[in-house]
Length: 486
Image (cartoon, rainbow, N blue to C red; front, top):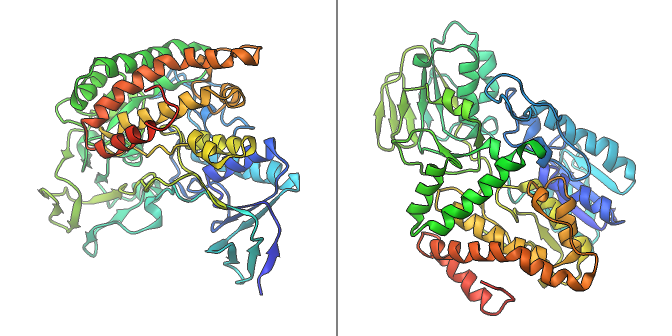
């Protein structure tokens, strides 16, 4: 028989989004929680990450809203020189452990069930002794696993590997690196993990001619400098925002928009002669990009199908590998691109991004909305899901959906104050103080929203002329009956 658990919220997943949601709920309400997670520690993928991983966005905008992550130090040397120090994987993992042990559990309002499996229908079971638990039928389910993260070490390579060929996840790269068996290295995948692995090899003095980079799709990146916190970087953030606006307003087609982004320097590409075909919100510094460009043995023939001693078979051809080669598999998807569903449903909250590429801000914001408003329709209006981009054409759509959400946030005084105060909001520096007279807030919000609405109207035109046309048409249909100024 299942042991009863009496809580207000049953949270499935103790990853970054689940932790950010519970943190804000603890701060802004008196509710109780049970957190169920199959891992031994909180933090989602972070405890399993490769040893040289670092948070590629500023730590000031990551984690939970109540507690800062990282330091305020500026790197004085290296590829991140002049920018805020990047938090290490161990630092992020330890941070979430401290949040659980020092804040959540001492509150007396959180029960934590590590190494437990959620079975559905409010039931979960211990992976140690199979003890069964059931939460009250009136509690709300919070799915913090919907935007899940895949890591290379958690699954075999998604291609056939002949016996005797050495393929490792990045977690094993430092151990294998010192073996005299390997004279050459092939990095498979061009996402953040692939970038990190190439930079790790270069940082450990591996000559570029010993590195092969299999790049199924060329990525484009965001310039990390444009997202730095603090007064020193306000001008560069403002310039990026203005540059993005000019690129949008001056564009006639989606291709024109992407080209203008590159020309302005607000997005970066690995090779100017190879058009980028993927975008996953990764940031790089200009010095990192300069180092990456020194690798000349780039294989652009699609994804790997099979690896043998003499040949790498790919979707669009083959490649002859160098001898004594170690393959580093970096092909896992960072964050799954799942179908969008309403965040708020009967008895359930599904955590999803509500701002482009900002998962922990989004989870904390959803918690703010949950504690502030009663109407489910209003909650969903404020928390329109924003899909993770995969290809360049997805970026304008993500900006559009973020803008539509933002305009709605401005209209509600409590929500405007929350996003202005939130440490996770990288654009909080730009938001002016609201009027003291509540009667003036509507006109204040309208003035603040006007440029965003103008930008959104143009973005909608661009998205209508893209593979995401069906989503844009749905937006138009919904806005015919909604309070929108588009």
